[in-house]
Length: 79
Image 1 (cartoon, helix red, strand yellow):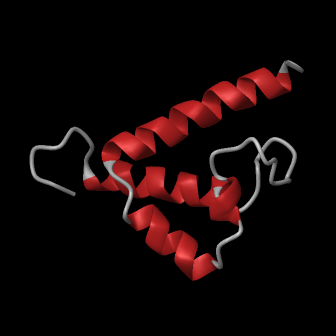
Image 2 (cartoon, rainbow, N blue to C red; image 1 turned 180 degrees about the vertical axis):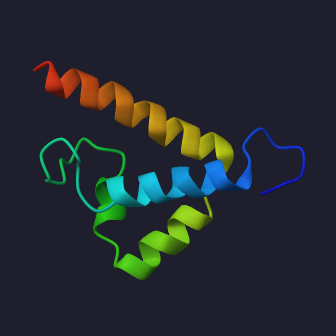
């Protein structure tokens, strides 16, 4: 993590862990919906997914996390 960044190492590690969980299957229904931005990532082997996650910028991690929260909210409400 770069010095002076807005996210500390522990928080960043937790975010990466959460993203890796999402990159296995959709937490909403344990599938891999084609409309999901993580669709192709889920098709990677586990080691490649880890490499992918470790290469994400803070902005990319934030985008994935926000997209997940919005999608999960919409899907749980049946939209």
